[in-house]
Image 1 (cartoon, protein in one colour):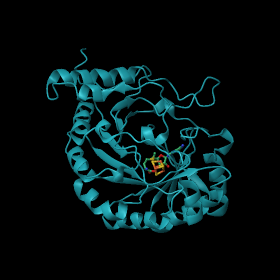
Image 2 (cartoon, protein in one colour):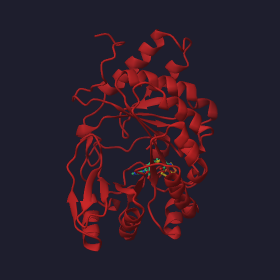
Image 3 (tube, protein in one colour):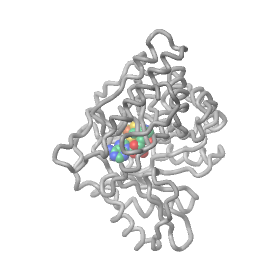
Image 4 (cartoon, protein in one colour):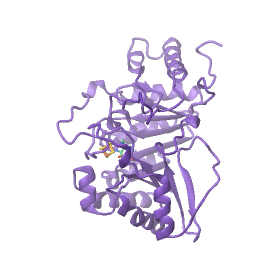
Length: 340
Ligand code: SAM
Ligand code: SF4
């Protein structure tokens, strides 16, 4: 086999990488404490960010190697200007079957229709609370009303299966769980709770602050209806889904801390300035931007070098994130700099 062959991206544990998360910016209109610093954030200068052409080219190469799912993230992806232009390009890349985006929803009411008509297939909207006061405590900004407007605008625009992502933090969001679940059931939205991970810029994460999926299931079963696990068709999906036994809706739990799912991980990440990461917690990056900007941008040789870079990154992937082990160190970059 040569590096230029289109064999899939398989790592040393046999994990086949088909899922790419692309950050399009490190900028954001919120300052969530579990992600960004409160102030004095130094953002990447514009010229360091990959252009849409560079992102599209990277995706074409990745798609030839079997990547079929792309998720756009950030920072807040909707603050990147002309984002629908990128969506339109990526939707046409042969092999990309699933094109999704994660947003905090603040700018969604204005952009939902354009994103939909550009070819965006799925939306995840982050919503940790239905209380403005808690929203401000978490995000250090105002805006819950706008997020809710964004959710309804996305429904109007024709997005189906809109998913809400809620971070679960012990001592802060216990009282949000039941109202969020009721809201999701009422409006026919999928809700997923995500355990708080050590990716905050302040590096203040503590294991005691993780509200586990198990404890949330107990709260929900008592307050709403018993939960029954659904069989898992795709083990690379990080969420474990349950259905309410009263027949009204399902709910998912992403438990990277209490029930790590690294053994089935199929994800790669591209940061906004063009670095490939094989894990959220990776301490190493592979510089795709250098290759994308190095002279011959259309030729096969440079595609071969990108292919090899992707293979190198996958080959170096560790078995697991290592959180909780004695030699674990949080990554140098916080979540907003990686892309969630
Ligand atoms: N700004 C967009 C948003 O908030 O949806 C997209 C980027 S954000 C980094 C992507 C996802 O990562 C969000 O759902 C956010 O809640 C989640 N996230 C951020 N920091 C996290 C942390 N420390 N642990 C777990 N999830 C986190
Ligand atoms: Fe911004 Fe999303 Fe990070 Fe919150 S989680 S600060 S919305 S990038």
